Length: 438
Image 1 (cartoon, rainbow, N blue to C red):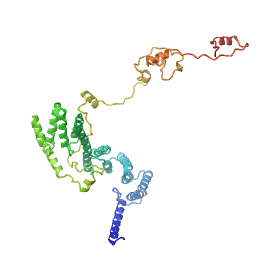
Image 2 (spheres, rainbow, N blue to C red):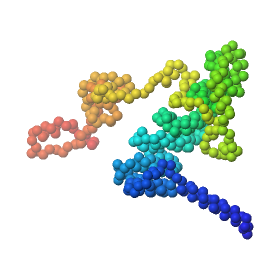
Image 3 (tube, rainbow, N blue to C red):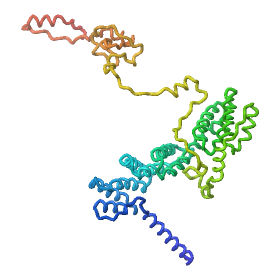
């Protein structure tokens, strides 16, 4: 038996669900055209926008495509192309986001000077940001989001989307740096020969992302890595302590870093006032996570960006992994300087004249004529004719080619008739006598 109270609650929840569903289906389009006109291209555009707001994305794209194909000089052409990308964005999903990104990039290519170009680039950045995984998972979307958000700041620095893109970039770099921190911690705890790997990761992290919320912890572990590696890295160890005191004056490792520098006989630097103000601002304005966010954190695929910096300039250079310390200097120089290039071959006949690199000890052959029966040899054995072009065969192959092949004994011929000519008899007599056993 259902009580009146439960029935009333069910009615209230049903009404709320209907209202939420109606609001979700009728989401206003962000870039409408308010001009009132009955021109056919304007009617097509308004119809497609109405379809987008009601979730009929495929129908809206067909209408917009009809507009662009039929009225190629319409004043709504740019808006129609942007609306196609927005429809894919609203449709969502991995496929929808990929199509939206392609359409936005086409819009920027065709209309780079319009205000909507900055909006299109920011939406690409935001799409990659929303697909970003946790720091210990695949960083492909995080790396792509970093690149796309940098494009907003580099190509459209004066747009209204630049501040939002800068904050997105700081949050993306926080996630990337956190991933590098986890790898460095793994090697640090492993110990032994892994201190080299830990130092390599943590050094590049501290240099590339100084605004990372745990950069001081990374420097502290980095200094301990150099301590474990021996006295020859004492200067690097002192540099790590110096950076903690100078660049992160409010860190919990400052006093320990000063004590280490005193024990090493190194000077203690003064804290940077700009770094002090920045850290103070970050501590006072750090976003506090809700209880629900903490509970859902372990099962949520999205990274936690509440500790990301809210001030300072993000790193605009691309991330370049450093060479580990245990790699020899000559090899390290080759890894960092040697590049693979592509060039056009000058002489087109080089493939015919140059020695074959697949043959051992290639040298020009001296044979001038092919051995009899060489045509009957397998294709793997190069003929002496190729020796004229500079390629030579191995010794074993030469010996095989030099021996004349054994000819099979011909079948016995029938006796020629008496009417045969003398020439025919001479030809028959020149053949070997057949064996009686045959």
